[in-house]
Image (cartoon, rainbow, N blue to C red; front, top):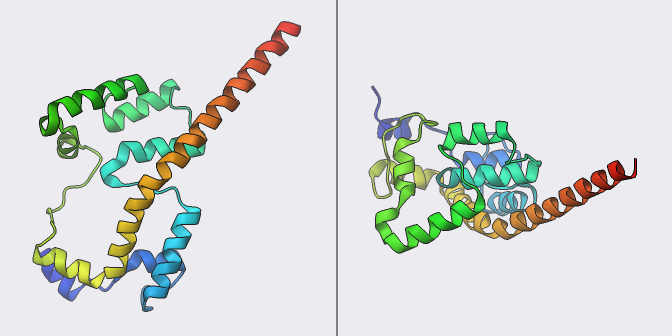
Length: 185
């Protein structure tokens, strides 16, 4: 078996893959700061970003933007299958209050990562390890882009929430109109 460090040193030549892919460059092309700036702007303008460590929130945002009805039974089943039990908004706020009261003891995010059945097992590489340092150095533009995406994820929250509220208002208006039309018949 080849170690990750050996693979990174001798076999991995996909440097700054994301930046290159977003700006339309070939893997064999070089990428620079101008490409990073363009990639950030493309992501900001054209993507609803998601994060693996915020998977449930990310899927919720995608559902909102794609018009997926999360109260639909099939959708609930799917979400439950992937994430465990699904909660409505009031349950989520109760959970947040409970976790805040418990402090670090109630950190369910760490537990969720360990029991996640929707991932492949890989050796854990953490910041500071030689493997991490080498990969981060070779992919410095992707690392900057990733940090930008983390910021963008937070910034998009208000946009998604506003869009979700507007969609609910429109759905309510449609339902009300359908009900009025039925009454007139």
